[in-house]
Length: 198
Image 1 (cartoon, one colour):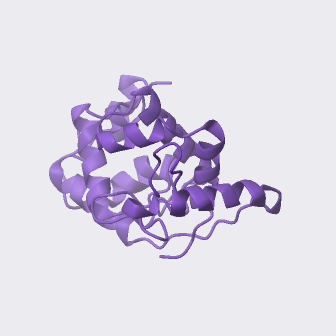
Image 2: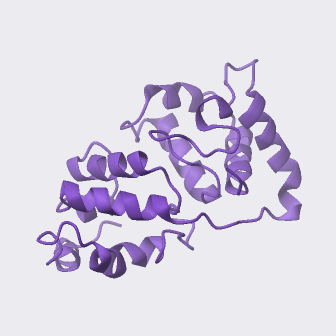
């Protein structure tokens, strides 16, 4: 559900004048969904802790200009300055990633995810995810860290690439994600959610 404009205005009020100091912005706005250090406890919101700095900056700018669509984040980002975005990216990128375990009952599905992530599926032209996101899903300066991300959030984003509702990032992701079966998509999301190493 989109937040009322009056609430967004109230939340953002007073922050645009202090571009370098975003501590109040993080405490009063960002922390409500993403947690104090970016380790969101709700599966609805992405974990930002240890996410790659350039990637965070790009996504916030895309939310601000509308090239990435979100009922919540478009309104939240519309008044952010470049300096605020840079400071937010610096902060979250510097936070340590928390460890999150995969339930034992999901180990068989996790194994499928491991295989797809590291080996791909030659029969459906799915390359290994590790080719771009790295052996431990840490990504790089421009590609997102997937390690430790909420499974539900990863599924949501892969699905958005499939159905075309997310178009602000590489077209490669659409061409890959559309070939994933529902089992593979869920398995990969489960696998990366349990990765904690870099």
